[in-house]
Image (cartoon, rainbow, N blue to C red; front, side):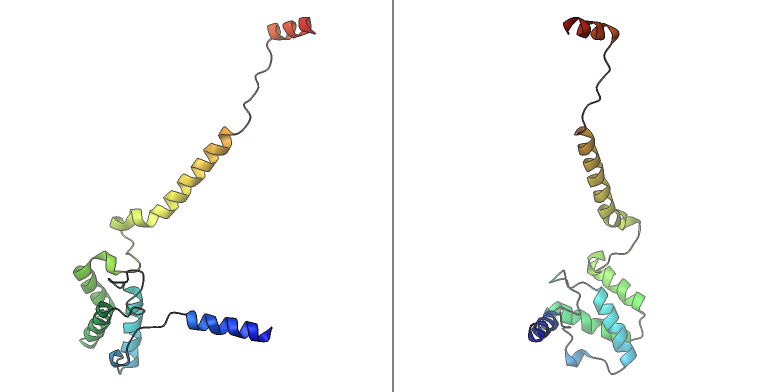
Length: 148
């Protein structure tokens, strides 16, 4: 049993995504490298589209990682680098789009979908209820007595 558990955790460790940063890209300054890695985790690979450039092996991702490191070495702030990339590639380059009026529908869509689903379910279950029975009128009661 211990071997099975050990094999399971070893398999999970191998399945974890590895960073694609090459040794020649790493900056000598640990603080700048940490900033570069943090930024790289928030930028989308334009080739892979569901990975950050930190996780992607695509040549464009490598170019973007190098660009980020060059701009950091030049003294740019994280915001300036992010703005530069957005100006060049558009909002799509950000893995998490900015929370602003332009993206309000994007951020509210899951909530609106849940609300719409809840309304559909509510309407469905209300329509399945047995219809309310109207009480018998006095004439109907008399007729029922006559029949019985």
